[in-house]
Length: 132
Image 1 (tube, rainbow, N blue to C red):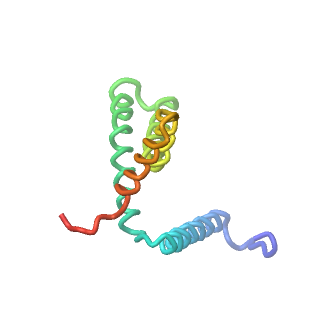
Image 2 (image 1 turned 90 degrees about the horizontal axis):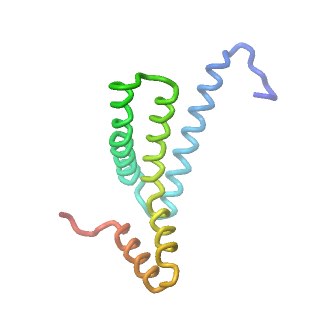
């Protein structure tokens, strides 16, 4: 865009095209990363989206109900709602890392227990080979 400025295209369409380009780039990187790891992308993506939606709904609905019933939609409550939803999704996405950090802190003097808990997490994260 710097080398060939297009004055005949509105800026909103340029921003929209850049957004679509970044979305496609992110999708292709996710597909290639899942292929390198030997994982399937769509089932894991679907599970992550459902877990994030459940967490955001569970915690965000509480703030939304208070906002509707008591305070009304003001800047502080909308900010609290957005931060609560972002926190719920972040905790869900980074929960394996959070568990690992908590284990290191709680069991600092017990490396055998840390190792055993890490193995249990790895076994739990492995896809099951049998059908329920």
